[in-house]
Length: 219
Image (cartoon, rainbow, N blue to C red; front, side, top):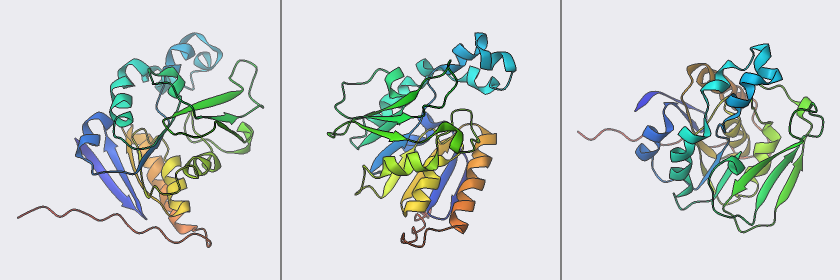
């Protein structure tokens, strides 16, 4: 069920449960996403959990999200999924990694994205301290733009776990049409604001993305 929907620039933002919303969508060319992967359990007894800053993480569980992961990995389109190494996935030739290197000692030095692409594995370097996160596990916009670079022919991108909207910001900046789904109202509002800001600061070297068509109800 779609609780709320916003169309901003060439992007479609949906508030709702991705398992319920994905079957309602039309065909997409690719999936680029960063699903939750159980970090909440670690936070309860770890240093972050003790600070009380990551309460929402405790609601995230990779077991409950596996059906959604299975759904979009069986759409028959290219998939790039950060945290995919935490899920049950087929073997992959192409893993993408984000090297952060300036993390605290208790955190990972890099993150991994599972893909179903026939491509050499690649690494992206971007210091974690070089961007302002609006989500606990937010990714930098240049990282998601880098991901889209592996999908040159994909014009319609799906992000079932939109979070603060980084994938759709990258889509807007690169002239792609993205559909993002988010269950949390607070993050949905942040994503709308960020995508709106991206539409107001277009890249002069990228053709403007066309708004996605709206399907009118049959009478």
